[in-house]
Length: 202
Image (cartoon, rainbow, N blue to C red; front, side):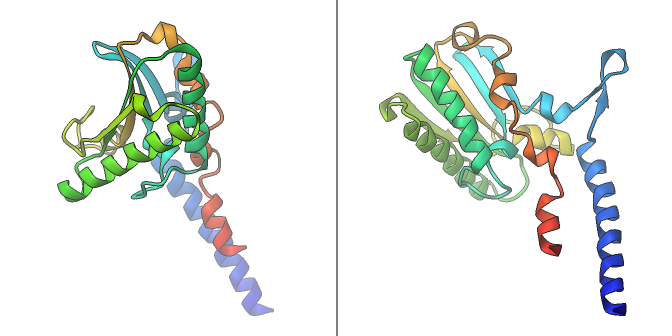
């Protein structure tokens, strides 16, 4: 009986510490205009921007991949399927998938990881019905950062996968709200950040 009580107390203490640590890392909510709390990570999970080369869909790596892995996870497959549906319906343009990392770790390993991730997204697009002849991929490792690698936030921004719809406009493939529609409901890594740890104690 005493052993079970000690176990229960340890589990409660573990959860309390973990909750505090997770909230500290994620920042959970920030205050936006008018004092309304907003989830900054959700807001930036997927960005769609117009570039000189075409419409660029940029996804937070956490939607597509687990840390250090190159196989697309469940939420990532839903996201890629959504992208494929839009691309099939709205454009016949060529597609280039680019993988990027931060500067932590060896450059060779990062190059390989970014290329493997880009190739994995290409595979999922093909499975979702996009002609493979339309899709090229390339891994850039840490060579093309979108933010400074000197902060955790900057490194998170640099760990990304980009889908370039060559020569296309954002307006044609879905407009300014496309990023929100693509990422809707996929932020399970924020909604249940303790899920993985709970399983250890069940």
